[in-house]
Image (cartoon, rainbow, N blue to C red; front, side):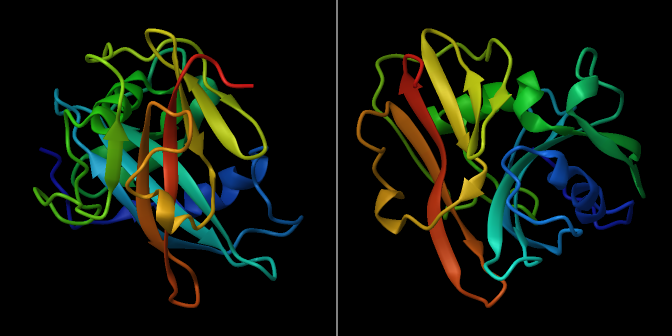
Length: 221
């Protein structure tokens, strides 16, 4: 079980993301600095208790029409070998000391747990409270049998999402730019093997729901 510590972070997660987000191909902001706010998300447990896993939704209000982004993060107590390209930055945690924050799409621990939550083998946890399931996160899986826990290959970004090659001929597509889709919270999109959906807040207080990730059999064009 992941323990949520009530302590300080220097720099904060939002400060790290303010510098990192504009470098992403799916970022929709302009030339100025993002105006980020935490808008939602959830956590997953690392079965070995070593890696923090958080799916954070942030909204950027720097443009006339705010955009919501899904940013999966992993937090480690030491650098992840071979993942220098995925490092977002380091933070000083008031309890745990130095933490290395990564774009979780490139972290095998997050990939394995994302597959597991879509299949229903693990449960999404509340973003801010220890040992509390997040009931707003919904999922489905219509495939036969259990997938391997290893996500294989290299994650690649496009202007909307990140594709994470997965085991046994499947592909995980993580939606980076979030769009409201309340009717798709409980059923997978047409042709999909599984999905994950959740909720977030817009800057005006509106609460939206939509797809976070979709699991396909075979590589998608």
